[in-house]
Length: 112
Length: 117
Image 1 (cartoon, one colour):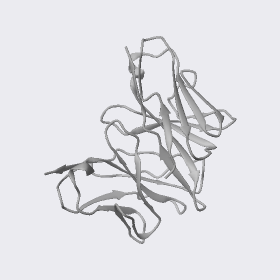
Image 2 (cartoon, rainbow over the protein chains, first blue to last red):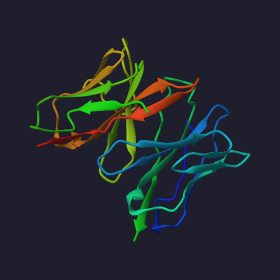
Image 3 (cartoon, helix red, strand yellow):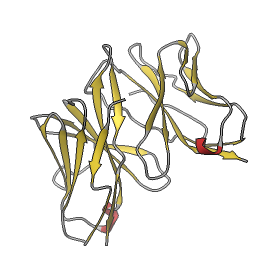
Image 4 (cartoon, chains in turn green, purple):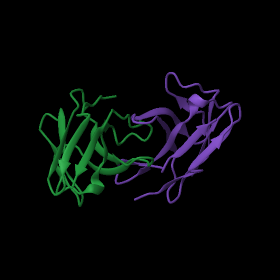
């Protein structure tokens, strides 16, 4: 299972764009990159998933370079409610039995 | 998206007793469910993979006789913490996969806070 490395923590002011980069040097051909958000005492919540290039949804964008050894989660104009831990995971999403393995995550603190 | 529920949301039990936590997929069938444990300020740690109708696969270091997992139906998996001790106090989270357009999406329950006194 590919391991991921993220910054332990980040601070940002409200209204700013936040970019969290994740390294996954050993990503396999079949692996997708998925980001989850977790608030205290809650289960993780799916944010976005991608394989290559760029993916955008209503809450975030995911940038993946051609070599796929890293990825960047971009949160536009963060608010206080975006304060949470963000996890980057890689895994084969076409395998129903392969669990997602969590790294340490990035603790984002949004300041007013 | 799909919904995974857990019951109870929190439980307090005395040392030496057993506690059962339920995980249900509410609007989809899940042949595979996963159980995670999370200690304060730490990441989620995978405990076991639960397959409907078969024995669970436990991660290294997780005692299968202490953490009993049963996946009796396509919508229900249970985790029983037997002879609980204070060090078992943790946040337990289950997860289930549902097939999307060819790929599987993994959804997480809200978690169960276990406190052993």
